[in-house]
Length: 244
Image (cartoon, rainbow, N blue to C red; front, side, top):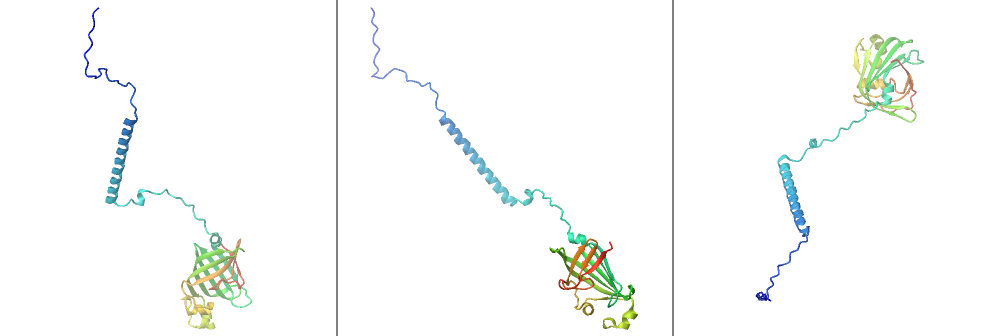
């Protein structure tokens, strides 16, 4: 029986091949590296964007409000002033058979915040033979309705004039201390003449007042034919009838 000779020894070194692992390697390492790289790229992009924006702002200045327009805001139409709406139109009062003094008639016209007051004075009962006409033009500053439905009116006086209708009769009377009146002439009442008519000199832009009450087709006014520099409360109201 043949004998197989023993293999020579190699100084104790093992000839057995090294063991190889067939188990899959853990993916943690590669994925973590990929995430890190991705994060670095994003940071670089963000920093680059900030630098670009800063450069643009440095060149163009701050953004204007026009670049970021606000939505259009539609406001409801303002409601008209109820007092002014009710007051608008023409009003007339006549005292053609007074117990004392000359017969008179006064017409108020209110339009667009402007008031024209025309007061005519006559010689004879029945409002015959007109002597003169006083015209006051005022702007409405404020209308305040109180709890009892009265309207406190504040005006600015724009114009006050006197027009002569019968100079002969006025000169006979030395009306307002003068006897040189001429038919058809118009005199400005801002100044001394107004003091004789209304008790106080008037100035353009002076603030005057009245206390009104509107009741259907009737207007009650306390300072009609007068110029009141304070709210009239003790004077009896004059009743106007609407004509328009």
